[in-house]
Image 1: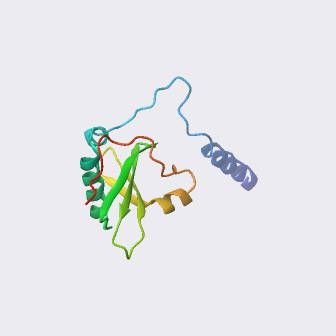
Image 2 (image 1 turned 180 degrees about the vertical axis):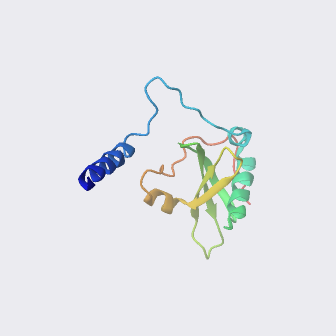
Image 3 (image 1 turned 90 degrees about the horizontal axis):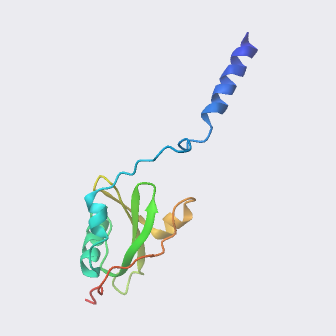
Length: 135
């Protein structure tokens, strides 16, 4: 009797480990927010302001953004990258900003993102129009 119960549990466990992809022909639903779409419409200066605010809201700092742009989609998040320069005392930092459908953002150092398997590399695929402030 115990062997039968153990075999049943093992078969259920193996079934649960199967592929979670939707069946063929079934459409997937993609949730997006207006904020995600609006970020793609911003010029360089306004994108820098938005990304800098996300960095500060996450508890980090950024003296000046000298380059930024859209990296790509990761699950239901839009990934952006911002290159921040600081005073001569601190080296530049590349930040990954993940904008979600809830209007929120997750901010990570690109070095940490690239060390995580499965996450996209911090490479800008689309830059905004205009130039970033030189101040």
